[in-house]
Amino acid sequence: MPAHVHAEAVLSALLEARPAGLTIVQLMAATERTRAQVHTGLAHLRQVAAAKGLPPVTWDKAWGYRMLEDAPEVWVGYERAFFETVHHRVEYFIAGILLPHQKEKRKKPDDPYIRTVMAQMGAIESTLHLLASLE
Image: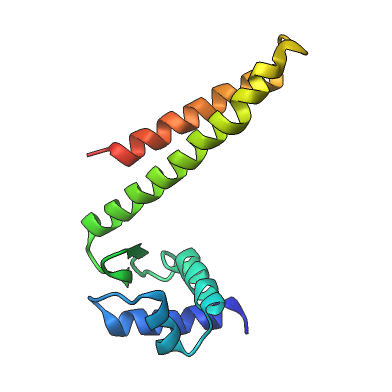
C-alpha cells in the first residue's frame, strides 16, 4: 500500500485518541498495520500535515505520538529535543571523523576541503546547540 494510505490510518487513530497520545504498539493495534507501515505512515503524515492544516505530529516518552491543536509548549519541546539529538550526532561526527581527517593534513597542509568542512560543521554544531537551548 502507498504511504498516504498508512498515513490516513495513523491520522485517524491519532485524532481519535486526542488529547492522549499513542505508543507505536498502540498505533499498530489501532491501525492493524506493521511497525514499518506505521513508521511509513507517520513519516508521510509529518510531511503533509502543514499543507493539510493539521498540527505537527510530536512524540515523547510520556505520551507517545500526539497531534495537539494550539500546543506550542509541546511543539517547542519536541523541536528542542530534535535539535539536541542532531547536535550530538554532529558533535560526534566532528570528533570521530572530521578531527582525525584534519589531523592527517600533514600529507596536505592546506587542504581547502577539510578547512571548509570544519568551518561549516562548526557553524552547524553551534546553531543546533543554540536552537536546543533557546528559552
